[in-house]
Length: 210
Image (cartoon, rainbow, N blue to C red; front, top):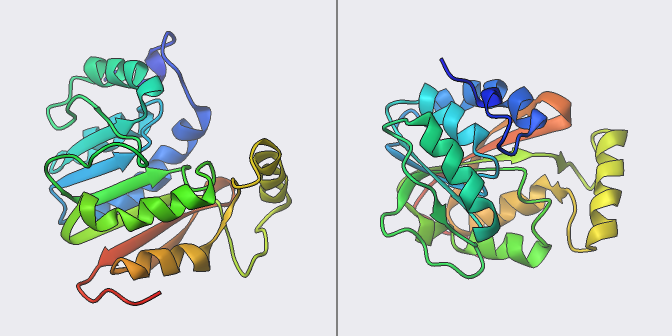
């Protein structure tokens, strides 16, 4: 079987290789009832290929900004999986949602890169991007009660803020509130390698006020 590491000419993330199996272990249950998953910020495409290959019951739709699309599309082309179509351009701030809403949404290592107003905008679009009874899964580092879970996360946050003060590791309570305002309720908070978490939300029909 061809593995993601067999493409030395394509962008490669060792972190994706390290975390893809632990993430998959959670997604296998979280996305059991999903038929289409929309991935926001697919990056190198390693996650998209691995998850599509191991979750054959669903259609995995990768997306990213224009600058990353060519390499992402090439990895997906080489994978040649029937449930992994050509990636779509999707800048969460400017691009329209795909024509068909997904009943699963996944994003990894994006919320700390997005400036905070973009994070808020991302959550405000959840109901445009997903159908009823959707599942939302978010992977990345998070703080609890404004406290870092490790010294490495604190250093990472300082590095992000040196690039843009609006970047940074997000507090889980702020993320939970943004999701809940759109009708998504936190169901699971799973520990992941390297001081990361995987948050799984289920969409219900009662949108709460901010």
